[in-house]
Length: 323
Image (cartoon, rainbow, N blue to C red; front, side, top):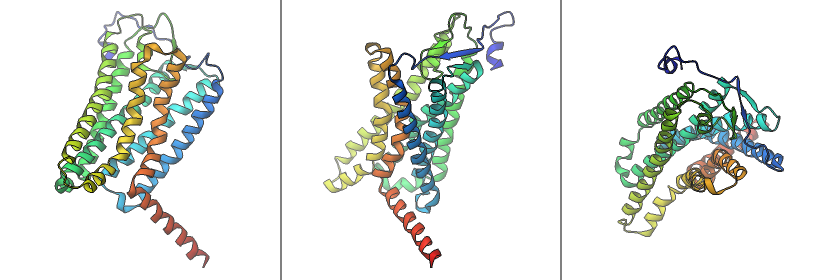
């Protein structure tokens, strides 16, 4: 962070508040019921993602490149929910709205890292489906364990560096007007808008984030499925088309759950009540981590078969012990 500040020069004094005040849910009637709902979603997310990660670790049949990406998605969902929901409940449910300056930037770092990684993880899964359906004979050569590990690692590196730059740019700002963040967490956009000096670099970084982490992944995924759909029209039998599309249903559901609420909220941001905006934005953060593992369990045959095998092994071992 000092590297960013040194560029300002030695004669410039930054005004940094001791704390920020998170005010997102204040003023919403009967909001206590929403906190209970958030807690319920968090518990489900915690249990469901842990189950998916455990199944992938325990079943050797699932130790494939595709399930490296699925495991990473479950890990990101689990880590992201744990970084966001308990802190949100602490802030609003237990009335601790004041968050120290450095803690706020750390909170923002973990939330943005996990939310961004979810989008890039969907890109990795889309590429996996593209190669599996369009180039099935080359799948084992193109999608290897090493390739998937490298792809996921490069996504992590890109996200971490990007969010660190965004946080570093925020440390160049002075806050001499207000310290009230009108959001449910330390939102990057809400923070730089409070600055009383030039926040253009942070504004540009925010736009780059929207393009690189939201629109480009979505465009890539849409073109991937358009290409898949076009290629499937050349398949001779309907049965083969349906079979190929079934392998994509889980991933398509994840894409819809992640991207649609964000796009709808952004499209109607100026036409909805501020309280409704806060609720909608918070739901876009907590719903995907909760529903992703449930969708994979319900819509993926490999995981359902794996659960049955593990259950039979577990029951069989208990019977053997009793005997």
